[in-house]
Length: 162
Image (cartoon, rainbow, N blue to C red; front, top):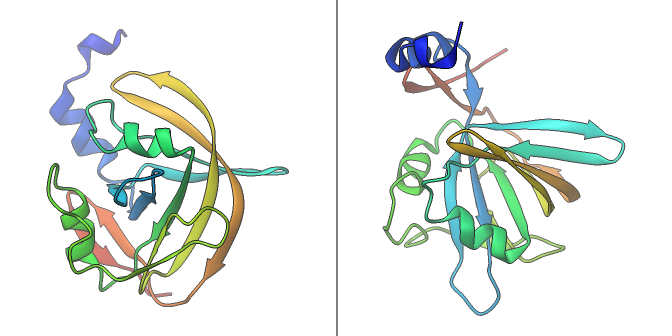
């Protein structure tokens, strides 16, 4: 079956049944303002060496600035950060207006206040992947702050409790 025979709406509907965490990927390009975008296509990739992967859309205007920075911080959002997820998903807005952050320890990429956990990375390799790019990141530092995560499922936000 060729990919052209798969209905896009059906594809989204079916894959929407896979719950994912919600992250905001941030960077601080040299001499520029901080940048970031909401990303749910994020996963652990390797333990040795420690690596993660993410998949920004090729239409993103933010991703090229993060790639230019050469480093990024993946902020894993907490259950009460839906508004933050939504604001960082909007193109062209001042996404950092009113957002409290501190520099991540190795690269200075924005580490957002209130996140459940974070992973700071040096940019690895970038691969073509359809209408997205597949990006690897080498983990430089990471941490857990605790709390419940924000989840995305079937087009909406929710939470998880064990």
